[in-house]
Image 1 (cartoon, rainbow, N blue to C red):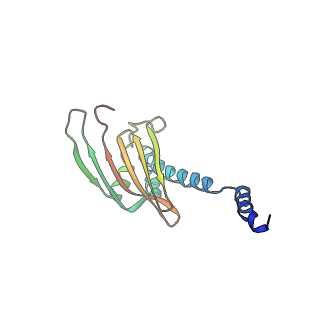
Image 2 (tube, one colour; image 1 turned 180 degrees about the vertical axis):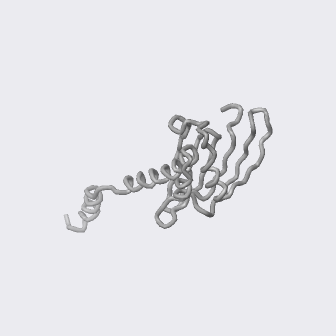
Image 3 (tube, helix red, strand yellow; image 1 turned 60 degrees about the vertical axis):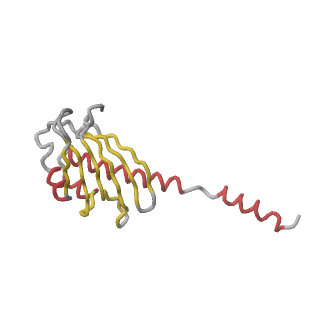
Length: 152
């Protein structure tokens, strides 16, 4: 056999011998996206607006549908970045929610090199997130949320 015939086999062996770093990088990005969402929810639960400032873009667009109780009609509630920071500074100030046991289920749906999507189930309902990697840091750009439906 000529050396040229071995070239594809040699290339395959080289690829198999090189450690695969992509899954590790993907895991690191997924963990960073998850941490941004945790900073958001724990920033509110723990009355820590600095965690909101760390994880949320000042260009935030947030809209939600909330209601007083399961029998009330939903109301649309937009929120700016500053309103979210201010809310984090007061929402749980009296400790009506135990920050350690309050729900904070995070699901990271998709992570690309610049954008990601995630979901959060929290005390106040369900939030869906769009995140972007800005200057090497994952930032929450958009949030769409609602109070828990009667079936939750």
